[in-house]
Amino acid sequence: SRPLDGIEWRLNVDREKAAKFGVDITLLGTVVRLVTNGVKVAEYRPDDAQEEVDITVRLTKDYRTLDQLRRLRIPTPNGAVPISNFVTLDPSPKTGVVNRTDGRRVLKIEADVEEGVLAAEKIAQIKAALAGKKLPDGVSIKFAGQDEDQASAIAFLGKAFLIAIFLMMLSLVTQFNSLAQAGIVLSAIVFSTAGVLLGLLIAGHPFGIVMGGIGIIALAGIVVNNNIVLIDTYNQLRREGQAPREAALRTAVQRLRPVLLTSVTTVLGLLPMVLAVNLDFIGREISIGAPSTQWWTQLSSAIAGGLTFATLLTLVLTPCLLMLTARFERRGEAPELTSSEHGHPAPATNPGAA
Image 1 (cartoon, one colour):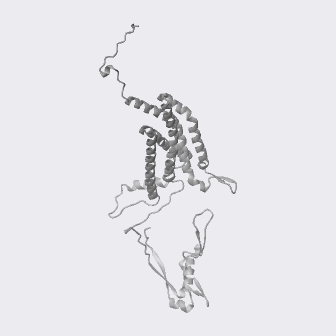
Image 2: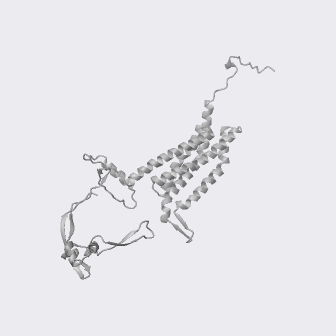
Image 3: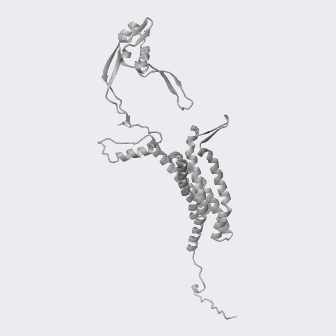
């Protein structure tokens, strides 16, 4: 946004002469704009646009010159009057505008990226190139626009994710009365994160901070349900007196179908959004890749991929973690003391005594 050196042409209007010819100054400005920026006559909003587009009228490119500006004629009640009778063109140095933000002068550098290129990658390259540059005194660089919005989204989603994890941990510890089992439930969130990246990789979508982050937070509340069902069944079987190994195996067998059905139905419900399928019930049409589906494809791919990966891993890993927890608890228990350890002699055994 730095003003470039150049020449501006100023139109000096002799109002006294213009009044003698009966020229309207407002009409003069309208005619001059036909040669420069054009005259706005209406607004129009296309069907595929969100904002209105200005409709302007101006002369063709061949007639937008200084010579044509001098040959313009202004309509008056007495006929068309040449503009050169009361207007003179004077060259003058071009003046710029100083932009300030919070009292500091600001120069903006704006650019777009080519189709298929991620803006985040280009920003990273620019930051790496500027890392070793020494700037003049009083000059600083700040990345705004998409990079600033992305940093703000990361901070907000990070706080929301931590709050969600804390509330889930608090609820699980209250219900299970065990930090170990609460940790096993939340371990599914770690597995789902790997599944999110794998799902986006298969679908061919980049990881977006907004939709990908929302997908991970939404997925955290879904994948823990499978572990809650497994651990609750395991605790119930343990209270019935079954051994840890038998309880873990029975838990995986009894809850296999409910866990799989819950995950499969959820993934199948998200599949139309993953494939960008749009259903028009009024027009009775099915379209693929419609603009309205582009926004949700990344979110649905993240949830579907993470849920599939976490479910398959949870069915195998959660019983193993429950067995490990039982072994650690068994090692931590105090051994039973015999009578000799209490100071009393153990009864002598005589195999031959009847």
